[in-house]
Amino acid sequence: MFEVGFWELVMVGVVALLVVGPERLPGLARSAGLWMGKARYFISSVKAEINREIKAEELRRIVEEQARIPELHDFIDETHHNFTKTHDALRASFESPAENAVATPLTDTLSGSESSTSASIAAPPLAPGLDPNESA
Image (cartoon, rainbow, N blue to C red; front, top):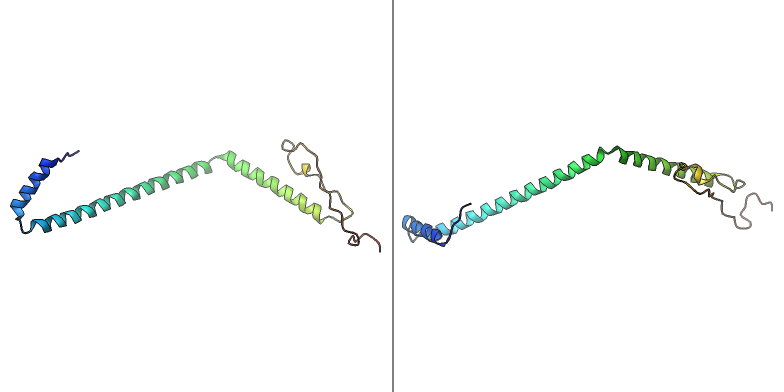
């Protein structure tokens, strides 16, 4: 925008020397340097804050877009439902009496398209002397 070369800086220095005088010129240059440093720090901090706000706004927009995706919510709900059914089936198989050694097949808890095997869970055998149905 503004191109300031060596000769322009020399001209500003000569004018400042004539206007301010040689006694006060070093103090004035020091003050001008401090103010320029503060201005640069302020500008850089404002730029950093703007960049943080832009990134935060982009993240908010992405989260809102993902919240609007109905397929994602359907998938989450379906997965939660399948896990709940599987959990309930496993709990029921472990809570059933020992005479019902074979539990319900896990394929009953999954939807037909997701399951292709018909495995079942059997209760592990008890150690001798620990079976409550065994007569002593």
